[in-house]
Length: 78
Image (tube, rainbow, N blue to C red):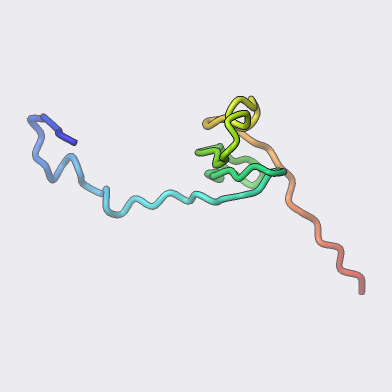
C-alpha cells in the first residue's frame, strides 16, 4: 500500500496501534457472523462467514445490517 500525503507519517498512523474493534463471532442457524456490538440489544454485521455462495444473497445478514436481539434467558429452578 502506498500513501501519498503532505501530512507526516506519524500523524497519519497516530493511534492505529491502539485500535481494537470489539468484534464477536456468533452462529445464526448454519451461518457464522462476525458482529460489532452497538448497544444492549443491537449489533452491526461486519462479515458473513460461509462456504455456500447462496448465503451471501440473504438480505438480513449482509455486512452493515443492524441486528436486534434479546438476551438469552437461563431457566434456573431453585
